[in-house]
Amino acid sequence: MGMNGPLALALFAAVAAAAGAQARFDAEAVRLNNRGVAQMGQQFTERAAGTFAEAFKKDPKLAQAAINEGIALLTLQKLDEAKKALRAALVLDQNNAQAWYNLGLAQHAGNELEPALDRLVAIGDAAHRQGLRLPLP
Image (cartoon, rainbow, N blue to C red; front, side, top):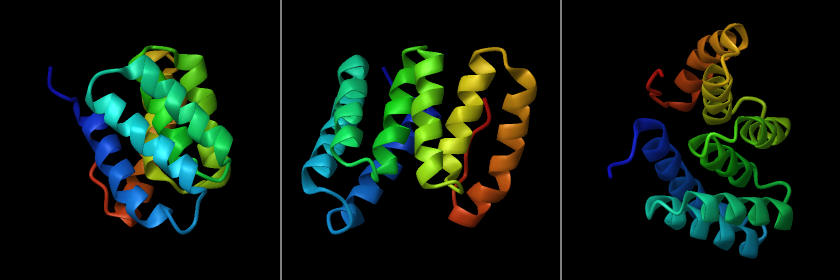
């Protein structure tokens, strides 16, 4: 089973972010986040969601863990939980295109079409600033 575009992008971003995260974040939280990335790559999505939640609890400044948890929950179609995790990440990093994009996907999946459209349009500028290319749903 291959990875879809958003999942592959999320995993790539998580691994890339982890390289610089060691100095800024709790080392155990980074390790847990990395474990969750590995679990997602092995299609253990439910387990990964829990691992990301544990990482975020260990270091509530590690926005990437909350984003990854949101992506895992979105993959599991746990939309309300996914939106909550993604919003927690946005409190820490309001310009994070990946968080906004996945929040838009969660809203789209929940048939919240107007807010989803607003989110997906708004992430265009943020993605451009971060050098990301995000596939549309």
